[in-house]
Image (tube, rainbow, N blue to C red):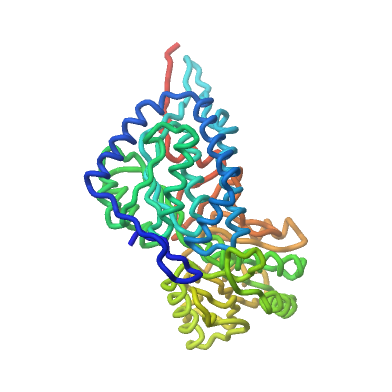
Amino acid sequence: MIQTTNPYTNKVVKTFDELSDVQLEKKLAKAHKAFQSWRNTTIAERSALLLEVASLMRKRKAELAALITLEMGKLIAQSEAEVEMCASVYEYYAKNSSAFLKDRPIEIPDGKAFVRLSPIGIILAVEPWNYPYNQVARLAAPNVMAGNVVCLKHASNVPQCAAMIEKLFKDAGAPEGVFTNLYLSGKRIAKLAADPRIAGLSLTGSEAAGSSLAEAAGKNLKKSVLELGGSDAFIVLDDADVDLAVEKAFLGRFSNTGQACTSAKRIIVLQKVADEFLEKFRQKLIGLKVGDPMDKTTQIGPMVSEEALKNLDKQVKATVKAGARILVGGKRIKREGAFYEFTIITGITKEMPAYHEELFGPVASFYSVKDEAAAIALANDTGFGLGGAVFSKNKERAINVANQMDTGMIFINENLASRPDLPFGGTKRSGYGRELSALGIEEFVNKKLIRVAK
């Protein structure tokens, strides 16, 4: 079902029809036609479009943020912050892509040679609900600047956010087909990947969805970028500023109600400071205000859906049944809507679901370890490899620990956070390829060699 269901009330607000094959063909034809002209526009023209998109987002921030909160339950202040982040992404690429797309000379003894980054066509973006504007901006901004066009298949539970992004591009003056919203079910992606007009595919989502998309892309010899799940380690060394680490752990784990790939899911603390950290961390979770995510005083809002809540609760119960201990929380909140208590689990061992599985919700897994080597070993004992954090007053020590962690991103003495100027992506089962920074604009371009004889 493509529909808006308010997780605060669990009531369906609005439904949308999926595109028919005929309607889809018309949209693909328009996108393909748009590419033929958009690829020949100047960097200045593309930049002007993205700057106007960013400006409109800021002007309409209240409306845009309210849609996020309505459709997936994010606290309204965090929704407003997401809108601001998106605007900064569009501005970043508008201002920096001229440098990113410059010809790259190659020194040769006999003549001239250079690499030119050229657009390749329609990029299909398959995006998730947890950051419904930001995830799209990270794909759309660099590709529109590169001269590609974008077709969006958004998560089925944020259809109004998806339509709003298309409207922003239209209102900013984008030619029809430069950005196209497609109301489609996931099962139609494989067939769409086979369409010769689709030049590349990018997905942020689950391992299962990523595997399916990668199979379809590979079968059709098309480039893909995947940003999948994560079980990020948050390591606190014995010389860390514990108060800082506690504050950052709380924000890193429970922001967006814990529904983030790069959330601090596994908190690993050296024994010397483990008790102090755990007690202070526990205190942070007590007495928080539960309520309407549209109310700026609310501290605990709903999860995205009943289905997501039930899946998380099942993982927690199975982990506790296997011998783990709930320190705080551990159950749904008895009220209307998809509300779950902010939770800390301790005593987790390898046999338990919480050890190996991603907990996509407001549940922190806490581990006390004897030394630095044990922290690194535990951090790496996962199939995921998205992000991580290390806390220590000795920055060189922290960098050494970071160097031994098998992830795509490590932040020291701060939470892992998405920034336009920093590359974003993972390794192992967390996917491949990079978004944001100069690297993000290089994923879906033809790195064309041009050689001129002497």
